[in-house]
Structure formats: structure tokens, C-alpha cells
Amino acid sequence: MPNYKASDIDAPGTRELQFVDVADAIDNIVRLADGCRFGDCTH
Image 1 (cartoon, rainbow, N blue to C red):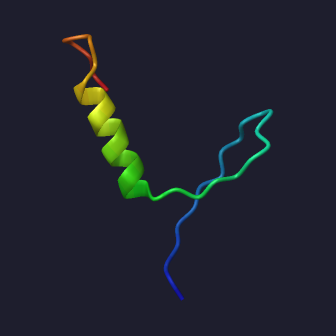
Image 2: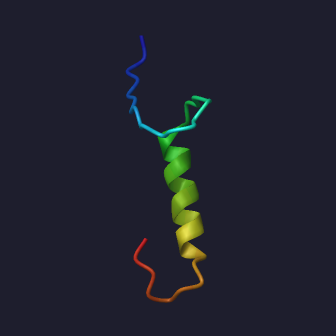
Image 3: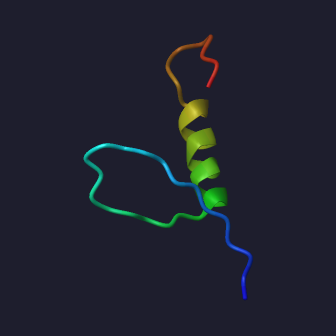
């Protein structure tokens, strides 16, 4: 059986649960942060 990890986040109004690949999510965050228009951004 695979070793899955999960988090439960309380988000009022959320009606959907999605499982995401954490590595892909981090890659997306890094890519978006690299394109930030603010030079002193601390993402």
C-alpha cells in the first residue's frame, strides 16, 4: 500500500475535496513566485 499523507483544512463553504501531487503544487508556487512583479517579494 502506498504511503499517502494528507492534511485537513477548515475552509467554510468548500464543497469539494481534491487530492493533489505536492511536488506539482510546489513547482507551481515556485514558478508563480519567480514571476512576481514585486522585486522585494518574500513568497
